[in-house]
Image (cartoon, rainbow, N blue to C red; front, top):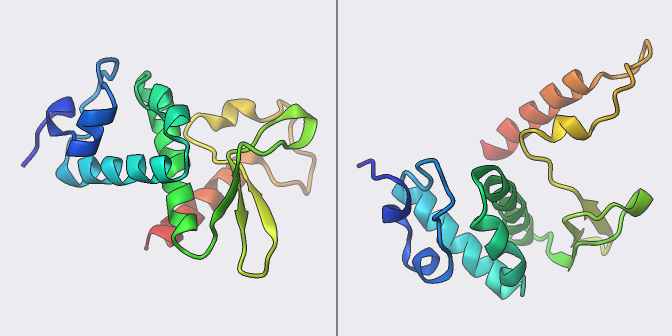
Length: 149
């Protein structure tokens, strides 16, 4: 059964967020509504709900970016790679999404890229022998398909 947008929000999302600014049909399916509830509970457990609520209530692209960040954090956290720090400082004044811990006790800096991230790439053309951003994007797409399988 296909139901549109806000009418399908789960009990957690209905209590915590307002989808008034969304212009698409998200969450169009019961599985998406359930996932949103799970991600909101995860954000709350991590003490990050106040950070994510405004982004989730924002326009579709910002909502989708926040969902991507939460999905990756949730997946890693529940597969022996816990989030050990949110918004860690990176190079050149940049800020990452989180640091995750590995089973070996190492911290790994994570920056989640969503559709449209190509705009952040430098405009320099790759020199012969360098990998182009297009080829890197194809590799990332292949990897994400393997992870989902």
